[in-house]
Image (cartoon, rainbow, N blue to C red; front, side):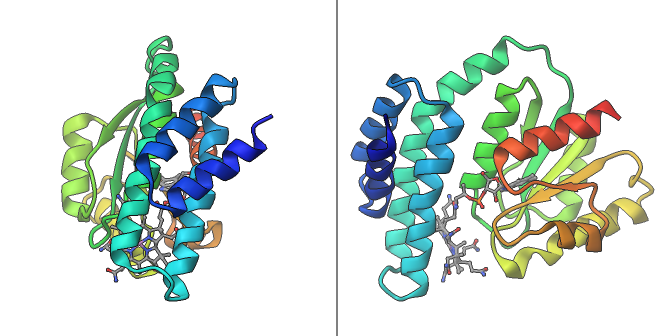
Length: 215
Ligand code: B12
């Protein structure tokens, strides 16, 4: 049914058109598609295409910002649906999410937050550009079980290792499971820095949290 609509959604993001992104996401949802399909088949491809245009010099920072706003408008359409699902489930664990210091990308982190909430997890979202000390403080205050870190710039990936070092130095490494993600992050990187898990997308972030909490 909706392949053309997914293309339309991708195009609305590339054309930086929040109204079209919103209407198209609504149409896809009304046709009975899963919210996650809207993310994976429409929103993410649109942003990836924008990233490629940025790399090739066809688009600049203001265009990236406008495309991000169009993507956020589409996410806003699926948000109530996902939160409604989560409200029906008892809370199973608390997950703190943050984008690491130096990095202000948060669309992916926010989608991870949304899917975790829809799966019935409690999410403490501490926002973007957060250093390890703040993250640990917020995890303690919020009594988090899992710390999830997002990094979208290759230059900010080392901040993930810094958090793990802080946990080790403060005697807290056993207290929290640490999971990581973001476009440049890989399982190999997670293994290298001693993280407890890596998820390539939001659906797999949920699976990972479930797996870690069932141990
Ligand atoms: C939108 C965007 C922006 C927006 C961000 C708006 C916002 N609110 O987030 C703005 C315009 C602000 C921006 C700024 C910059 N950007 Co930018 N941006 C992008 C773009 C186009 C899309 C990113 C995105 O949202 N993707 C969609 C989401 C859904 O995907 P995701 O983040 O990967 O998240 C998914 C998974 O990774 C995973 N996941 C994410 N987090 C986590 C966490 C956990 C725990 C788990 C398990 C999983 C998980 O699940 C998510 C959902 O499925 C990318 C290009 C691209 N292809 O990614 C460039 C890109 C990331 N940006 C780039 C650059 C260079 C910049 C700037 C430095 C540009 C500049 N000259 O100033 C600045 C940096 C500012 C800063 N200090 O952070 C480069 C990075 C290159 C590199 N190798 O590091 C990219 C790749 C563009 C490019 N091709 O060059 N950007």
